[in-house]
Each structure stands twice: as structure tokens, then as C-alpha cells.
Image 1 (cartoon, rainbow, N blue to C red):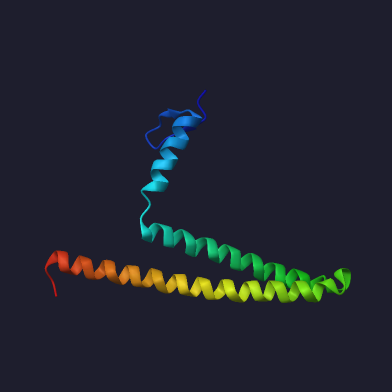
Image 2: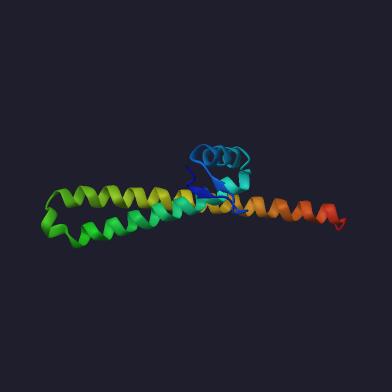
Amino acid sequence: MYFWKDKQGNKLTIKQFFSKWKQGIENITPKQRLVSEVRGTLIMLVGYIFSFFAVIFMINKIGLLAYGLILIFFGMAFTTALKWIALKQQLKVFDDIEKQMEVKENGFR
């Protein structure tokens, strides 16, 4: 039974799909991994910030528990923001290294 199509339009079974997916995951470059981490961390950060403000607006309904949740979400948002900044810096280093490699390959100094 066919469930998916690949980029060429060929129909794939579940087993073929997961085989191709596994090959793709095994061949991922460090930069591709880093880019996906940056995006995922940003999504988490937005979720923590949204949750932080949602708890603040619902403070009367939740009661005393809200103060603990505010602290938790604030701390998670803060540490996730620091992680996101660090990942962005690592990505910038990768980009700089790639530019230097291009310059050396082209013979420019």
C-alpha cells in the first residue's frame, strides 16, 4: 500500500519512506543540525513567553499556583533565550568558516 510520494513523484510504501528518511537523517550536516536547533529553540522560546503571559492574565483564576508557574516559565524562557543566542552565535561562526573556505577555494586572500 502506498502512502507517500518522493520528490520525483514515485509512490512509496511506509517501509520505503522510513528507509529514505533514515538515510536523510544519517547524512545531515552539522550546519543543518544547528539550523534546525535554532528554529526549534525559537519555537520553544515563543511558547514559554506565551505561557508566561497567559499565566499572568489568569492569575486570579489559578490562585497561588500562578506565582510558581510564573517563576517556572520565566526561568525557562530566560535559559531558552540564552541557548537561542548561543546557537545563533555558533551558526554565525559556521557561516564565517564557510565564507573563508570559499575565499580559499577561489584563490582570493
